[in-house]
Length: 175
Image (cartoon, rainbow, N blue to C red; front, side):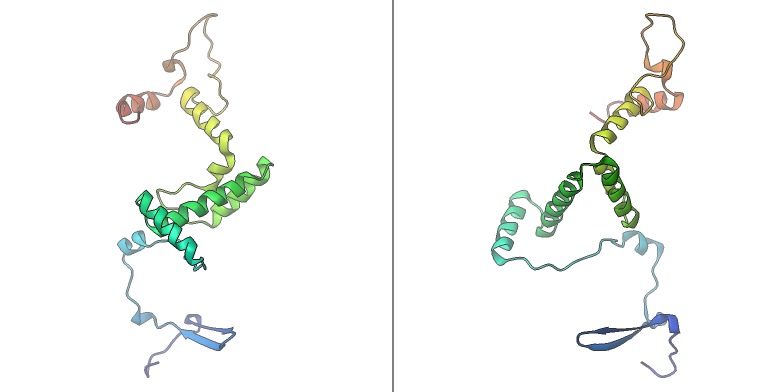
């Protein structure tokens, strides 16, 4: 460490490994300052090194090439599918949702990621989403509006004005 450079106690960490004891000192002045733009583009994914048999790597590379993705993207997709299948193998809904919720709390999702709890809720989530879009509530039934017997409900009877305006503006965007 250069002379005259003071390192605060909170910027020093010691740890022991099989190879001995180590001390790490972080000199704040030497680190580049992060701009707000740098922070937005920082990946929050933790990276792990794993051992994969050479034969499997060859197959992964061939599959990645076939699908036009990188080996890393293919491995991430395969792992995600396996983890989702494991999550969905938990039969008790409350336990499955609790596990997914706890995982979501420690995850750092970007705008394109979908929380695990959506998978854990499975058909229930899709039913709630459908009901909300179809009937403006999560219960799957049109609201009880006082209308004469035999009256055919229209969307205008139970949709909010904001919903109706958005629906008209968004027509043609989603097919």
